[in-house]
Structures are given as structure tokens and as C-alpha cells.
Length: 354
Ligand code: ADP
Ligand code: F6P
View 1 (cartoon, helix red, strand yellow):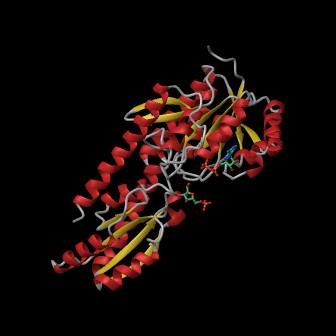
View 2 (cartoon, protein in one colour):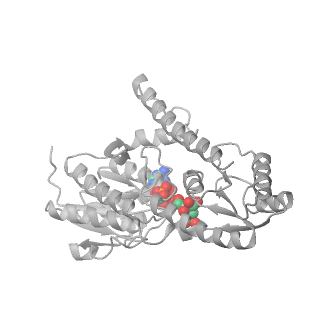
View 3 (tube, rainbow, N blue to C red):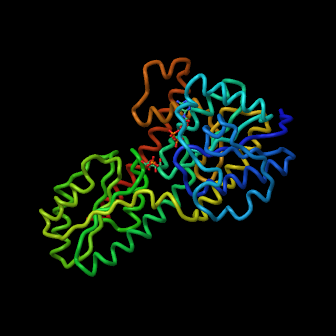
């Protein structure tokens, strides 16, 4: 049933990601086209609690599709998680005539969206994080840009490694997820990739590097996910000691969270933004927008959060209470699908780095 929404709010929360602005633009333009006003809420849930917001016109989202960061700024707001904070947020929505909210961010942001929905403010979540660690979607906004930035940086490092016959151990972001490390490792022709999801055979990797050195290879790249413990600077020291190859460590850190979004991220953000507005206006709430293959679809946020926890092995006692066999099988199938796709890539990376 089409809702008679007059005004929706939009916010970005958690770690920023390139493409958030393209998302803000798409949400704003789609809503205005449907005769719905858009309230831009600054600094995530903190701005919502404090009433830091402004009615947007199309001009407010001009010249932003090509920029990284988020014009709405982002923040992490522990107060929002408290009953008092939540009440302030709901009151702020009522006082500012906000009928629903599009919340752009990661799983923490979605938990907040669920809490608001339960208290009468319908919310739709859009996955935006460079980590790509939201199990319900194949791609999250920002992931592609971050990977392209890593590739550019590592290509540069490779040039200087080749000149000096060195190895670069490069640590990339991703929190606990190895997606960025794995895909960029393959794309940069890394000699080894270390991610937390699979055990790393350090001896094998070192032997392979020694053999390659003997056949004349001069440059070596090792990509390490930040979520893989004890493999950052320590690994660089061990590689140098055991291979005799001079080794440098580089942490790319937040540099890959900025910069102009890639075409893929702009497109994904534009599609998801429009889908989020239409989902709200169609009377839906508590959904996260997902991409599988080429399709944009929706998943209940609770279901998506359980899926995430199942995939990451964090399911708590009673998490699946109320879920029937079909739903549990669906969750397991989705986890297996994600694991298989990661495994395939990991196997490929090992085979072509020998
Ligand atoms: P991300 O959305 O990228 O995962 P965070 O985990 O930092 O980032 O969450 C962003 C914000 O979402 C938090 O600062 C907080 O305001 C809100 N949030 C996080 N977890 C919860 C929760 N369990 N309940 C309600 N709100 C939450
Ligand atoms: O979630 C995005 C991310 O950049 C992670 O890759 C990283 O672990 C974390 O955020 C860094 O957080 P902060 O911005 O608080 O330093």
C-alpha cells in the first residue's frame, strides 16, 4: 500500500565510505520526484538526537556524486543505544515531522534502524562500508572504490620494489573481513595473501618467495588483512630474515576510505538510494537493501543481522528462536554460498601466486 509520506529523513552513520554522497543524491532526488520532502540529518544518530538537520532541495545534492566522504558527516553515537537516547531520537522525528528514515551505514547502523522502526519510525537500511562485511549483500557501497585505491597504491609500491629488489608487506583495512585483502591481492599479483578467514601457511609462502627470487623475481608484494592477527609488521621482519629479501611494511589505513567513488559504487549507490525511497513509500520498513548478482532486493534487517552473526560464528543463545526450519535452512545456504565464493577466490589466489 502506497504510504502518504510527506517527509523522510536521511543519515549516514558508522565508518564513512566512498559512494555515500551518490546515495544521498539518489535518495533526495527520488523522494523529491515523488513529492516527498527530504530532511538531511547530520552526524548520524548523534545529529538525530540533537536535531542537527536541514530540509534538502535538489541543489543541496548538486556536485556531490563524484566526491568521497559524506556531506551529511558521520559519527558514532553510544547515547543513541540507550533508552533515553532512543526516546530523544523518536521525539525529534515527531517534532520535525519525519515519517521515515533511510539509514546508510553498516550493521551497527542497521541495529539502530531496527530500534527506531520498533518505536514507530519506519526505517530502511542501505549497506555502505568499505569492508564488504555485510553478509546479506554481495557488495556494499565503498568496497569497490577502496579496492581500486588499494590496487593503485600497491602498483606504486611494486614499481619501487622492482627497482630495489624488495618486498612490501601491505596491510589493508577491512575490520575482521578479508574481502579487500583477498580481491586486491589477486588483482595486484601478490606473492601471498593473509586473511583471518583461512589459516596462512607462512613456511610455504616463504619457500615460494625464495624459489621465485632464485629464478630472478625482484619484486614481492604480500597483502595482509588488518583482521589477521600477528601478520603486520612482524611478518615483514620474518620475511626479511628468512628470505634475505629486504622488506618494508606499509599500512594503507584510512587513505582507502576517501577519494572519488568508482563508477560501480556510484551506480550501486544510485540504485540502492532509489530502491530505499520506493520501499519506504510502498509501506515497508526494517529492510536492508541488498545486491545479489545484478539484482537489487530487500531483506528483513533482523534476518540480515542473524545471517551476519551466523556467518561470523557469533550467533547468541536464542538468536534463532521463532525461526522455522525453512528460514534456518535459508540462512545456512546463504552462509555456505558466501563461504564457497570466498574459498574459490582464496584457492585461485594460492594457485596463481606459486
Ligand atoms: P557501522 O554502522 O559501520 O557498523 P557502528 O557499529 O559504529 O558502525 O554503528 C554506528 C552507530 O549505530 C553507532 O554509533 C550507534 O549510534 C548505532 N548503533 C550501533 N549498534 C547499535 C545497537 N545495538 N542498537 C542501537 N544502535 C546502535
Ligand atoms: O568499517 C570501516 C573501517 O574503516 C574498518 O575497515 C576499520 O577497521 C575501521 O573502520 C576503522 O575505524 P575508525 O574510523 O574508527 O578508525
